[in-house]
Length: 177
Length: 177
DNA sequence: AGTCAGCAATTGATTGGTCAGTAATTGAGA
DNA sequence: TCTCAATTACTGACCAATCAATTGCTGACT
Image (cartoon, rainbow over all chains, first blue to last red; front, side):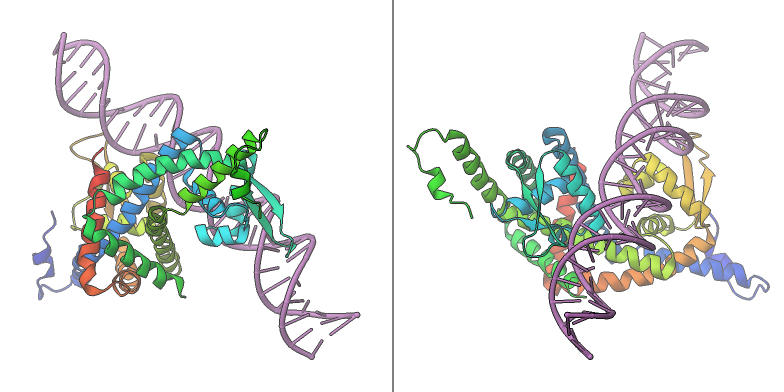
């Protein structure tokens, strides 16, 4: 351990730089220990861990990644209504190239089908195949279990509504640029 | 639109497969529209969007990625106390190879320094450089602004404690295998 | 009607991570 | 004391995303 208090003592002369550096270290420590930083870290960390768990479970049990599952959710919401790649990209927070390649892999795996958009020839619509819907159903069961276990069970019933309301607010704030 | 109700009507004979497929489509729609799926999606989506914003802001204004910032937080918590790569990896939910390469880049950028662990020669400790702490201070300011704006401001003051408590619970649930 | 700025999708090059496998080190049990 | 299973970091091969640049299409403005 380096002595901090001593280093900071004034009047020894000739140590301005190391004093400044030490002071900076203390400020940094202060910032690093802020409770807000911690709480916020919790949000990000909980989310990533959660996503990882779900991803590995889905891969293991259904052979689809979590992102693919997210696509399938959108495609199954109302049957017989395709969704444009653009919309999917926005919804999943992916770039358009990201979506192109994701849909490539899903098409490859027989989960979805690309269909040209009748209204706008730039746009490509994506539709789930029957196989895609079958896989989705299994995946949804796995997903539901994990959500129950890690999202519902741990938080007191009364707080749950408030939790999702808060998330909704945050999401809303992000929405507006 | 394909007719769903009609397809499902029994007694026409010879259409068992398409009926089954349609029924599956309806089940899928049901699962896809579950409010739990939606609410949970909110958590993941809010988190990823948030992280992306912070990442781009930090890159633009301080030249560090969000993950690098997370490392710096850990290293600055108590000055003069190095942290092992192992610990960093666990804390950031990265694999050990992930951390190796991340520390490589950070060392390259002069933000951190590797020092051999005195107690265990397998382990490598990481320490922030003076430059690292300086950058961290700027980054922390940027970070704080964004956290204030997107994590604090949007949710009613009274709910904030509950929000972080819930996140904490979730995090706890994830912790135990 | 003709132009042109903007948008959708795609592709090549790059980035930041994973996984599988390896070498060095450790500590617990025979 | 020796051995051996576990643990740390690292490396090569791969993967899924990004960015930047390109192509084709659209719609608004002159």
